[in-house]
Image 1 (cartoon, rainbow, N blue to C red):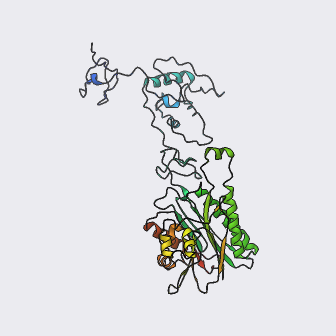
Image 2: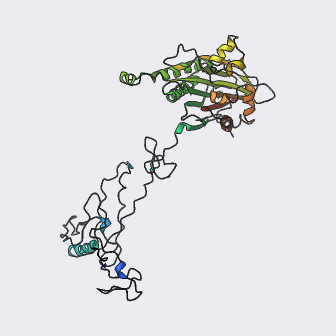
Image 3: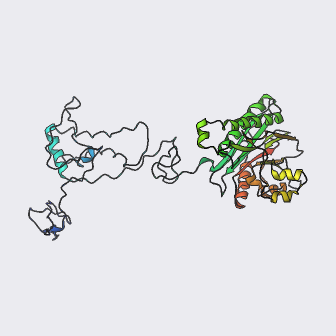
Length: 459
């Protein structure tokens, strides 16, 4: 059989908060129907803290034991279960924040596993504290709202989505789970008068290009600028690691050799060999890894670089990344300073095809030279030039020159003030490739010639 709703035992009207007498079915002040007030639930709504069982009504609390040696009783239940005021009506100190909600991990080192219990009011004796706490248990306490995520420390990466959560080592926010942009998706660097920009492009899922730029001085104090640009071979294993290792090794080799008096062309040759060794080292792996993935090949990449001094320009390359010369006086012709290690270049060199025919072929970009443990034979190419006028050296991957293949097209795409503002110029050239479709990763470095004195940079 059905039952009428049980009348709640309340001391105040839920509508106007006027005092009520026992047995009232309607409020004498506003006429509120007390029969619609839901009955007090049998279980306590207080949330358990650290797995403890919530306090129930009618519990005969034991007298608190002396805990600190000064006559102050220890608390008998968690701070979240205490009322907002003590027995004298004075506010209690705010309770500590609740622990994180289940399933959310913050991994902050040094955080205690349990939150300390709140100390009782020192004005209460042990006999007074127990009735006050017992009365608190009789009143329902609203569940505490989940605490907002603690802001990460200054050294930690902050989520770009929620701006509050810590980014874990796997690249995801521990608060909202949002995947973070990868650092190599877009990179920019300016070192004195030389600058470089690299972008993932619009079609690739990652950036397999890498670069290294820097400035140094020759033994006589003359300035020298260095740029290395590498393009990972996508058909190889870990092309992004290969390009990064090669660019770092070659850049470090050049910046170490030039101040010792090594001729820039010899330094470039040695830098390419150092880059090759760094990429070859990536192929070393346990035999078990090879057994589990026998289809994998060795990491590989291409490399192109330039060294600019006060009167000399040196380029070096393996693969199909390029160096262009664009004079400051745009009425004089620009030039391409490298020859591709590619199928198309071989067809043109052999006289079997015109350049237009060769680069229109689907095999055009098949490279015939690269850095990697499975390269047929490493043949570093180097060349030295002595330009008779100022200009800008463009070092780039095919992600750019596919959209500005001829030297004239490259010069037309580059801003007129690129020598004074190389970082801006590199950004414009990357934007040119993205506007053209961005089918590949795009990387470009700009070096003004002649190398300006130390301390001079872009405006």
